[in-house]
Image 1 (cartoon, one colour):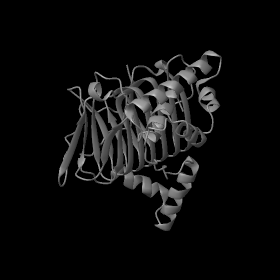
Image 2 (cartoon, one colour):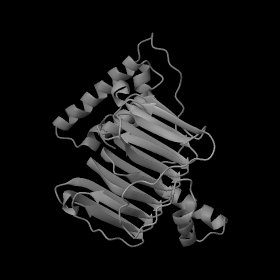
Image 3 (cartoon, rainbow, N blue to C red):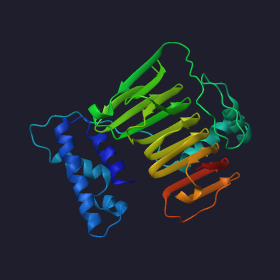
Length: 307
């Protein structure tokens, strides 16, 4: 967890408070983390030194001024242990009588409303295919300059998540009516409860941090340059098309492949790759570049670099 992830988490858990109170608390703890780092701690050590998260929240709420009124925030029930999710997926596959290779094949070739892209290994499409939707379409737009956005966080239970650039300075969230929620809390746009195909268009004028967590479904990202990029897919593939990030890239697939292309040369990345069962065309490197962390449990990794 980085200090910015900590800030997002803190703002989310305190989103029931008045905005000025949330800003005050977030600024206090960001200053506390920076002070600890100046004293020689690493970023993770500084965050850990603040205390156990739930205890910290209780302490913050206990110290609130009496005039501040809030309603309790519901805690997330999402499993925290990644390996436990893997075992759950394997168990589901076993119950359904589906072999894992067949399951991955279904994910690769299952029909979706977005036009399927067929390409060899790591070739890059010239442009994203057209999007078509069944039923009533919903689109929400958010202005980063007005909302003060610095991050887009997507949590999808089911369906393909696609991200591509747009020509204007707005963030567009598009999907079938009633299939997702999109709200700004603090400086983060949260797209949650996604249960169908989703398209997000991001402005390239803003170097936003992008985080995607998908339970069942592919994640596909086109031509995006983000500040940070974190993608996790439990049961599905991750496809990248000429993508990069300024600070870091984290890609993790439990059951599925990680394929596509990244901008710039391979030497521009510091690579940490781990593949449990599958093929991989990358090796670890300690180059002085953007940290690139890739983990695949049951799937292959095929990444090309576009200089």
